[in-house]
Image (tube, rainbow, N blue to C red):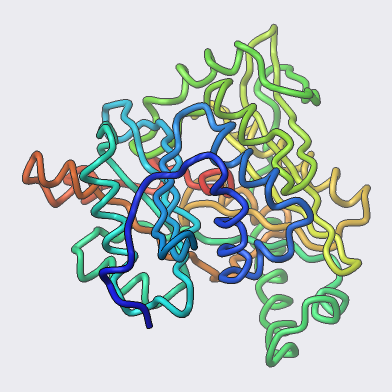
Length: 367
């Protein structure tokens, strides 16, 4: 273990990227598996519409720690504000236990031009969760759930084996049967007026008008405007995205982004983003129908859809055979440490009575 005195901190400088990626590949299997990690890293942290903040810890000329934040914008309660998405925090195994993570965070807070009010992250790491609790960072009050639709459960378990697979098979089949019975008792959803679902290569200015129409329906939602959406669903290296819009008389009633990912000879589909006008549940229903047809036509056996538990879209997805996988990421959403120091505020009051239909959190909310 190195001596603390030998470690110093600074922000990213040109030429650091290769050493940062080397550390990320040693720390996270997903980085080691990327075909072109340098292009992905540049897309994620340099092509984003807003700025990114990258802090590194060094011993001599070696990068032993890195901490990344992407600055985004969103609607929180009644205001549009900047929010920091924290990701790709890594510390070299030989230098753990020296509080490098905390020191990188303090360096960032004390040295960069502050304008973010909120920060959020997701994790499954129990050490990170415990650190958040010790720092009194707030848990997100609502659960995000991952819905799943599987055509052939046996094939899925063969390609993605898990412990006690037969229990998963039995549980999934039972939930799917229950959904099917419930769907038979549910009223059909008809189109309210005529509209068409079209595929587009990218978003244009009409999506900004759509954002203006839906933003006040939510108390937590990232800003869904042209610059962010075209960056988020561009050539990130994650996969190829298909963008669909429900349109009537040049007005966007809703949009959806789909992705097919192939790994180990097995294709899986993802509904990355799906959003409609609040009054147009028929559009959401038919976009989901379109998604299922899209994946079925391509022979995709398993489709995933992430949404807030209890959100109307989660309920609609069950009509098309999606069941709740009960897989839920741990989400932290809180004021930034610097904002708390400046304002003295710890508790985000508008979270206390927030309802599922006032929150949007899909796959697109993480980068």
